[in-house]
Length: 433
Image (cartoon, rainbow, N blue to C red):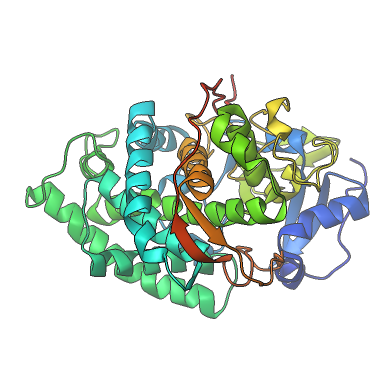
């Protein structure tokens, strides 16, 4: 590209905080280009978006994630030494550790634990009171993923871990008090996690060898050395925290049930329709705004030469709302994915590319299955009212949500009226190379 479009602003950091999820897509439309340059924290940065851009970004070994995330966000989420900041063989070996937990039997066990935790909690939600779906979903997810890891927590510890993990997620997207609180609580959680890892290694805490806690505690690198206690704790939190983050999708699933009104009975009866609904929740609602990396291997795309060390941001949210990919992209259509094709690069709310060899979220299958179960529980296991509230979603807030976390009231248990039909299950797309 002879003339790469450039944002005239001296620096776009404040504009990102103002525009949030819409920042890159808004400028892609303004410049009529899927790539343009800005200055972020006074450093030149190239923004890209769309399906082709995602394929370029997720070309194996083309980018490194080291240094790509601002430190406060890195510390709130992945932290130093985690799989997300590794490259090449080191990344591949650590990623395989995570992928070993993602087999169908293991995922099914987590989903069963989630349903059990939901049904255990349901009586406590009932009565003449209001609850925020986001808050209660976080608690259920935390209990389920800890049990799946091999650890049963008492109520006090469970409540503390839920609060801490939720704060990390809520504070990751914006500098300021929310971020500071998330960082402060993360240190407390890491101290606890290190203690648990140490107990497992000493044999003071017995966990089954196929549980995430055991797999991480005894994982060895290429030289046969175990992860340090600190890194093992960080990687275990990289199981717990993203699972609790699915509470945001459960909140959005409840929001979609009320605002967009899918066929509720069909969600119970037809697993293909349910899967489509869940994928549409993931496409339509905001989760991650963008991801970033630094060029490792120079390349050229659309006439622009990307040099080693160039910083690049990929528009995740805008790609999911891209009109050139999705018909009626700004509308929620529960049945969209009954016939829409999913590739490794068009539906990328949690990142794109290949699961095994790239930085695509290892927990995407878990997200889909837990969201399916939660949607079915919301429709078939309980009745509730939705009181008057603000249903708007402020896209300048990262992570975005309705102001009150989607409030429900007058919760009552109910009985599922239909059994799901056998489904033609679609796995998330994988890149074949």
